[in-house]
Length: 55
View 1 (cartoon, helix red, strand yellow):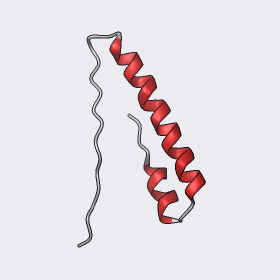
View 2 (cartoon, rainbow, N blue to C red):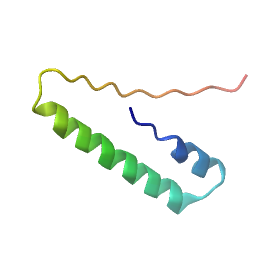
View 3 (cartoon, helix red, strand yellow):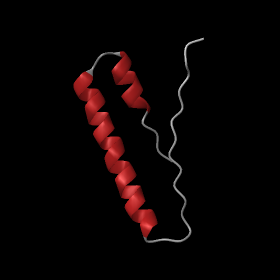
């Protein structure tokens, strides 16, 4: 399991470059996992967005 929660934290703190770095790290991780799963028939990858809208 992997999570990109630091993207959100950096965004809230208006730290643009660290946020973009986190996006790139997350993207690299997802691409690695997709490559891994593409050669297997026993691996499922679920990718989803969880967000909470304002109350």
